[in-house]
Image (cartoon, rainbow, N blue to C red; front, side, top):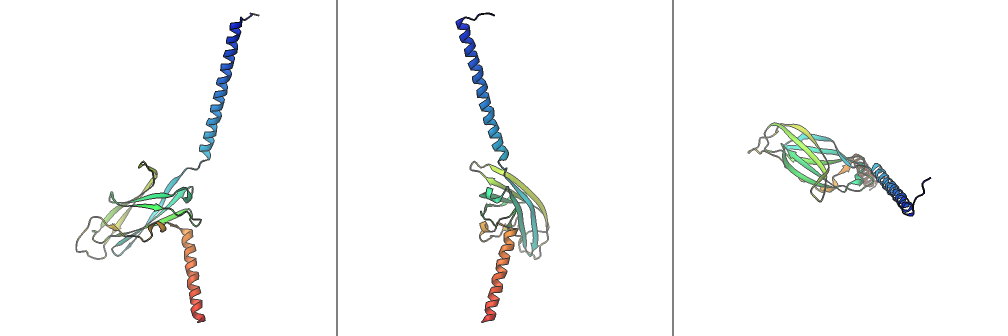
Length: 203
């Protein structure tokens, strides 16, 4: 057995300490990395989904209703932008305030009535873009959906226009509701009507 000098023994000790320190550091990094990966894995991803665009043509009006979903839940969002394009031209941009209510279900809806007076007969392309606005101007969780609408004017206008106008909706931030909430509000309204009729009969 070769006898090591004192200097060689010191070098061996130092080398062993360095090796052990590296292994400990790599182990710590691996542990931390695994923790971060676990956090990322259990963190639910956010997404906006446009389920469908419902259209209904009235006299000189096109009533649009955008049905959409916010995943994993509406509570994950505070603001969402909804942009309406008509024939590739931005017609209206709506910042939607999402109510944080237990009545909100999975599907939400937002109405967009268009004044079509003065538009010629034809097929028109409508696109809805939705996203979560960011301070930097970036559009997070962006999604879009297009439909083609065939429009036949019911009345003759004195002058023609190229694009429609969006009719104002009173309390726009309150019009974002779910189908569940609509049924609850409808039941409440029916109960109030029945109660009013009962009181009138008692008089």
